[in-house]
Image (cartoon, rainbow, N blue to C red; front, side, top):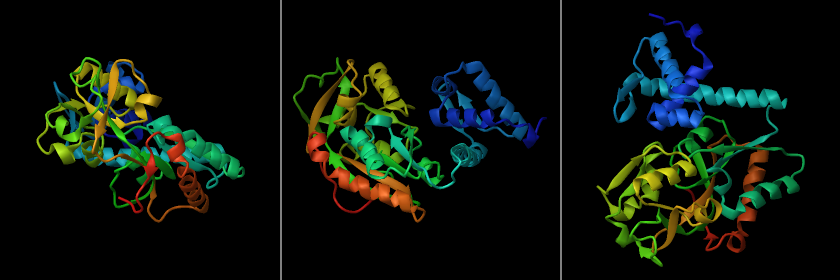
Length: 316
């Protein structure tokens, strides 16, 4: 049995992490833009080299074994540190760039994403921003591991090592397939959604998943349609295929429109809070400057983001 650590290759770790995050080989192959057989072979070879089973395979997908959970955490941390080291070496400067994570890419801060980033560049020409798109499953890990210095995300993200600064709030809407019974409604209330089948984003943190499914109103157990989507495009596809519903920020239908889906305003539910998150106690001076700048720019949200309101002071 082959167990040499020296024989491991970096791509094996990346493949294993992708499969674990996606919950299956097919979804991971799509994310990695490769065919499924070489992906499966690479992960199987990694298991043989370690001498342990990392993934429990079934017709429903894969689940991490106890050994797999331990190795998954270590592999993610190692890859994040390596990515950061490569970025630093290529840039030639160890501390100057501010690495900004964008949760969901351009929709991170709704219509304020580009003004926020561009405004900082204009106000601080000597500082360099390096932006990294973060999928929904990696928003917290990217901060905790140090892969990004600060991230623009949708709260709630709860972690003892993460510090949160709220910027502004925008309304949430119900997103449904065009053929859904609620698709043509002018508005709905949270109570009218109690029996809906909601898209269950199983690859993201529990508190984040629960927020978008309205679990505080719907209670447990609610009807769910399992999904391992971690990007907005994947969410859209799974919603079209499953017929399930989900709440999203009101800016999503504007900035990531999908003609197969309809958005319906929701009355009397909490809004989506756009926040900056950073690792507690590890901020550099230029990162603090970026956060202060973002707070100033966020005051313009009410004119640039329809329905936006100042976020309440404090943090999750």
